[in-house]
Image (cartoon, rainbow, N blue to C red; front, side, top):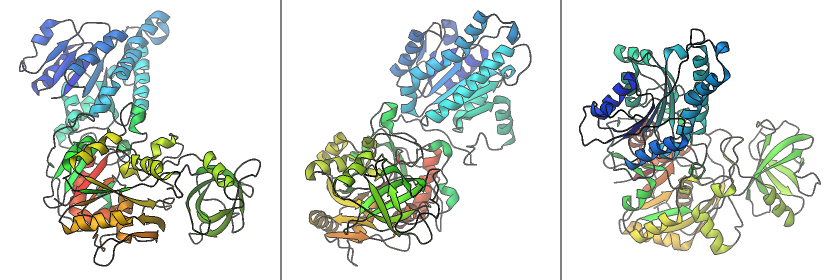
Amino acid sequence: MRTAVIAGSLDAPALELARRLHGRGWSLVLDTADAGAVDGLGAPVETPVTALAGDVRDESHQTALVEAARDLGGLDLLVSNAGVRPPLALCDQPPDAFRRLLDVTVLAPLGLLRTALPLLRESRGVVAAVSPHTAAEPGGPHGGYSAVKAALDRLAAEIAIEEPLVRVWTVDSDGHTQAPALLELLEHGAPSGHYDTAEILQSAGAGTSLPADPTDGTSASAPGTQRGGRRPPARESTGLSRESTGLSRGNFSLPGNLKANVPPEEHGVDRGDVRLLVGRKASGAVTHHHFSELPRLLRPLDVLVVNTSATAPPEVDGRAGSEPVTMRFSTRLDDGRWVVELSSAEGGTPADTCAPGTVVTVDDHARVRVVLDRRLEPGSNRLWLAHFLASGPATDRLRRRGRPFHEDAGARHPLSAQQTVFAEAAAVASGAPTHQSAELPSAARPFTDQLVTALVTRGVVIAPIELHTRPAPGAPSRPPGPELFAVPPATAHLINNVRACGGRIVAVGTTAVRALESAADPQGRVRAARGWTDLVIGPQRTIQTVSGLLTGLHQAEASHLRLLEALAGAELLTTCYAEARAEHYLWGEFGDVNLLLPD
């Protein structure tokens, strides 16, 4: 059951929306003292309605509305219908009148949204701020009202960027089209944006696609009803499976509003508060879950293979000759040299002034200097082998000065956000790691101590490997370069025994697959191994060591998709990604995850 709060004026259009939502089984919280309006909804009595009287500008009333929704199970839709329209031109309004206009029309909806955000994040819910057509354009008798509604539009657009878990709509309405148009937007899972209700209904009547994602070019399907932290029931795929002879880039394009830009912790929830999309190769079924359900989706004696590599703080600023550069360092070779990536101050490739023998000065006192030795990409100054002019303390200082790397330029989150629970456990067991990853092995990021305990209690076995990631290739389509890996003897022995008994081996991340396949003999038997791997896995190569994979959602150009295709097949993968886009899953290192199982 879904829940809506309709705040502000319960005028005829808002009452009609309430009536239609209630008739479809929605629970309602209405901002009204009119008991007759509630009685007139005419919907089944088992669908609850709460009416609360108060001033929408009052923080206590805003809290009461949100808490009433919480009592009904959560909040999926917040409609703000607050506004006053003094019939005065903008310059004719006294300051107090305009201040009240701002309070009711802008600050009250903003305050209510801030109060409701935790529930809306959980449900991946919708905020709709409704205004009449008179506010759409300047001019007319209500100039002040139009101006503050324009401010509300801009605030909504900013909030939509700040809150990727929530869709934010501003809706121009003539009143008569308000309820049916909002229902159309809900049905088609419209992305954040500004909408005109008359145009929405005109499109629906003509049979054309209704509000499409402007970054994607395709219409989204109905939004899911599950709440992020509530373990929703599994739901079967809605028939999106199709025959496929290979992956189509268009089927995997990333809608811009589905990128997770910040860790869940910055939204005030647990790092494991992400969604889990499960695809099963044998049946082609796709189901939707919360990540906390992972223990019951696995079987006793299933083996989860996890990468215990820690993430280094690899980014530092310096100067290559006279040019300002940013240096990302990752893997240390056995001969003491490091793999480093250079970028210019503007984020591009450094100029041709970089050459073998160039000294990169990392601090103002030249206590930490790095000498570029050899290019790793012919004709490019991006990736180098380099060595320090001093060892030991110089390397330590460099690490202390380093900051975590993030996919989004300019993003800054604590290093703890770039570590997995398995890396932290390995560091406790073995002390400071000798080798670290340049980028987060992100598939394992949602795991918590509590979830690991639940898995072990279930009988799932966790087996460690190491693969230390280097800086990603310049283009997502390029395969990863050579990386250092290690498969311990105990892990190799366990995997071979479980596979011989018909058990399932599930890799956590593509890095775990790469390590195991690099350690396998031609018959697929895993050996204890340590060294460098340049193995690239795609559809033409059979994966022998694992039968399942837990991974993030990858962009259309990513080489990782070829590995996923080799394991799960193009048809299941296409179905999974169509479902992920339709149900508004989040991409990226802080986003949702995909579990691919054989059965």
